[in-house]
Image (cartoon, rainbow, N blue to C red):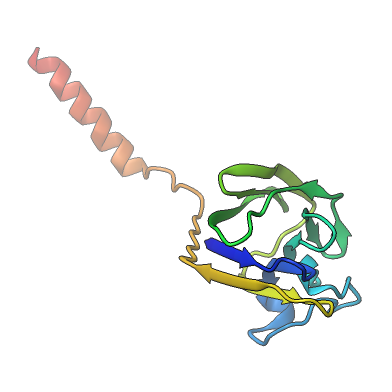
Length: 169
C-alpha cells in the first residue's frame, strides 16, 4: 500500500491479519481476548499484527496471539507518499513476517509460532490525544497457495514427448 502521514504526533497505526474463525467479519478492537489494547499494535487474539508507532520516535513491532517482538526502528517522512509492504509467508504452523517502508527493511522473516489460515485485513490507529493525518492508497493483497505438483499423466506425457523427440534425431 502507499501511505502519506503528516502532523505525526499521534500514537500510530497497525495492520492486522485478523483470524476470521475467531472474530468473524465484525470489526474487532485491539485488546480483544485480553491482548494489548493499543490500536497501533494491532494485537488481536489468534491473529497477526504489525504495529507502527509514531509517538516519541518511530518503532514497529510484530505480534501473534499476545506475543510481541521487540522494537524495530524505521523512518516515516512527513507529508510524502511512501510504499509500505508487509508480507506473511506460511512456515509450518507459523509464519515469517517481513515489513518495509519506502523500500527500507523494517524487519525481515520474523518467525511467529502461529498464523491464521483464513484472515481479513484490518487497519486501525490511535491518537492518544494528539493527531496525525494518514492517507492510504493502492492497497494490494496477494495470496498464494502451494504450487501444485504436476499430475502423473502430465509427467508421463512429457516423458513420452521427450522420448519421441530423442528418437527423431
